[in-house]
Image (tube, rainbow, N blue to C red; front, side, top):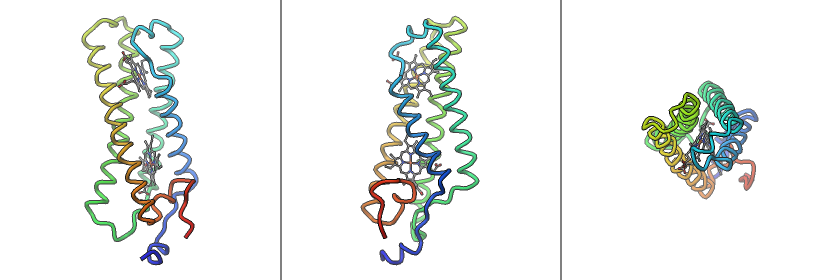
Length: 170
Ligand code: HEM
Ligand code: HEM
């Protein structure tokens, strides 16, 4: 079994791995420096830096999505069932959607604030959707990491195709 899998192992190229891991750090940075309350946006410097960060974050996701759409070939073993492949694809696409949603709703909050709608229902709704996108993204990322650990235990080289540590030797 392991010998069979050995012949089929796929490793993502350096650019694909870099896009994956740079994004993990970018997301971590975005979460660590999160705003604690909308009143903080009265600080124009902070408002501008949040908007700039969200624009960079969104451009990065768009570039990564286009690149991966053209070049991504999953490292799931060829005998993987269709339902399993679809589940992996569904989680990947949902992560792109929810992560973009965090940035787009964040930009919405920023622009509404800038236009003077600080105390409107619209801004409250946009903040609510921003937080909903965030919690959904966290659930999806947790499932994704659990799936990666499951593959590491199965020793089928899916983990090593993307993760630079605890790699399967052979
Ligand atoms: C891609 C960039 C961004 C990331 C990763 C991010 C991340 C977060 C996170 C993790 C939270 C807490 C959510 C929760 O507790 O469920 C949050 C809340 C919030 N964010 Fe963002 N955010 C981003 C962009 C923005 C932008 C551009 C603005 C506005 C200029 C903004 C304004 C807010 C506000 C007002 C809250 C709610 C704070 C509160 O009242 O609890 N965010 N954001
Ligand atoms: C912010 C956190 C993360 C996000 C948003 C994320 C997102 C993604 C996405 C969208 C893919 C599909 C390929 C692509 O489009 O780049 C992928 C592949 C992969 N990720 Fe992550 N990932 C995250 C963290 C992690 C972590 C922490 C691990 C492992 C410890 C991991 C392991 C993998 C593996 C093994 C693949 C390859 C799957 C395959 O070849 O089918 N990811 N990730």
